[in-house]
Length: 241
Figure 1 (cartoon, rainbow, N blue to C red):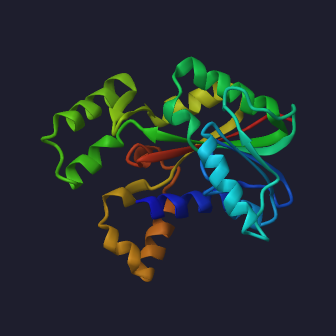
Figure 2: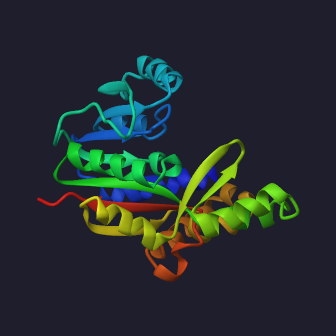
């Protein structure tokens, strides 16, 4: 599922990003899973993550990559982005909305709005409220009380505890409303994995099946009746000109 998530995120970005060179802030970007790919394509990328060890590891990767070194490696918080006003063409939030509570998410989204240039775009990933359900059945874990509680909490409270961490979950419309509340316009919600979450992973190794799968998910990625089935959602919002 990680490979499907990465491939689909790359497809969504490729359709909506401006042409390089443009400046991107990868906020909560970990060790740079997306940063280095974008730098290799010619974008000016600043990786920002609250975990110092992630930034240290990213620096090692950058030193060994002649064509993908980043413009900046910053230990920082989505709630206080250490960049100037209107300094970025687009911002990636592939993590902050997973863990911040409601008030902190609004602070973080306001920061993304601040650092974006007029017309710049925010790409924000979120966890679907239904995300704990399919994996629980597929992996045969429905009799696990922790899993049962995670499903209940996600649906009723919009957050759940799993593997030592607390995760925030959204209905698709909730995610759109949250981005719009921060001032972004033309907000759209996209399924990342879509129905692919339910398929056996062996299908991924069959190139023909894989390409057909990606094509069908792409064709249905904004269909309202299917959005919730995706484990992860992507909201795209634009700062007004």
